[in-house]
Amino acid sequence: MNLKKGQQMTQPIVKLLQHSPTEIDIINSAWVAARGCYSDKSAYELANEEETFDNKFKLFKRLLKDKHRTTLTHINFSFSFDKVPIKIATQLTRSQVGTCFDQRSTRYLPKWTKGKRAYDYGVQPIRMRVEKDEKFSNEQMKLINEQIEVCYNLCAATYESLRNMGVPAEDASYILNLGAFTGLTATFNLVSFRHWINTRYNHSTGKAQGEHEELATEALKCFKDNYPNIYKAMFEE
Image (cartoon, rainbow, N blue to C red):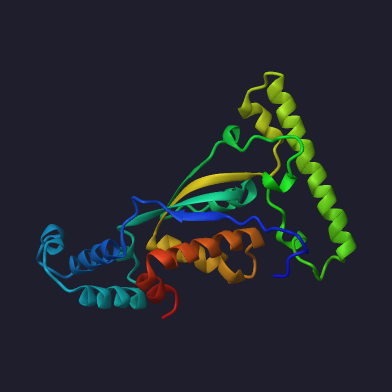
């Protein structure tokens, strides 16, 4: 992506929360669940058996290959998503199976301050960040960007004016636009995460909005950094 000269891209900020399981925890959980399907031992007994990581990981990869999904849903891991536009958060939270989300209330969105750049508080659409776009000339994109910033700043000024008049934040927030940034706690299991990535990363369905793809890309990078072996088995093999 070729950015406009002097333009800075505001990307989602994705971090794995510290209470999430380690890679070994995830492999152990899948191993116990899978072994419990054909063993006369209880899951508790299997969890206390000694077995090498390599053997457990071989079984894990076989579960992926055979699409034995239920055995991969027993451990959840959680992300911190920040700098996510409300519109994308709304799309994200439509996912219900195997996921859990808590979103920052609009009453706690960053305080709009006169004189600050509009894009400090809301997303600049990806198409407006690039030098050339098939649909718009540079001059058209400049005008579109100006219109978007006018709208953002008007929403900002109106929001702060309402708050200064004593209007509660939960009511004043109705005028904030869908591009305003919010944050979420997002929890997935392996199956739900893989499904989300497969539908939102790299336009795999041909329909993923650019900003949603951007969030999925950052989440996948974070996943790879924290779970390199699982990442390779799930997304490269």
